Length: 128
Image 1 (cartoon, helix red, strand yellow):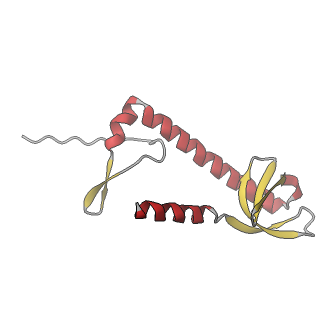
Image 2 (cartoon, one colour; image 1 turned 135 degrees about the vertical axis):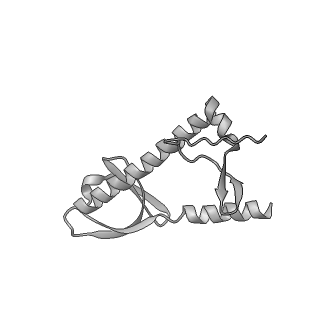
Image 3 (cartoon, one colour; image 1 turned 90 degrees about the horizontal axis):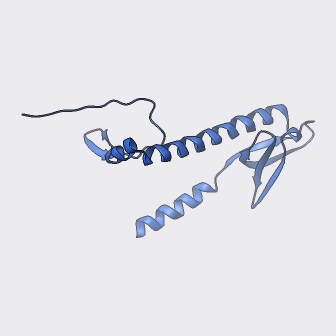
């Protein structure tokens, strides 16, 4: 119980840590500090303190626009991988892999799939 509570508190604290950066306006005349939240290709969401702001991507400098688009694509790709992994885990083959383990230095430990595997290596041993 105590460990679960501490894990939850730590997770909440880390969730508040965004990707802080200095943002520059398109004309270069203004800057502000803020944490990147998301970007959908046409607008960007930035958190400043306790407030979240969403505005057109074109209001930012070219460098900030490129960075925000790249980060938005990373987030979208990560979310797509999570969804695909969940769907794979629900398939017959995925259910068979629920007992998946990985070798961690000197022992086997339980392993959860974080994304759909690109390839499989099956090992079978039989003793007589």
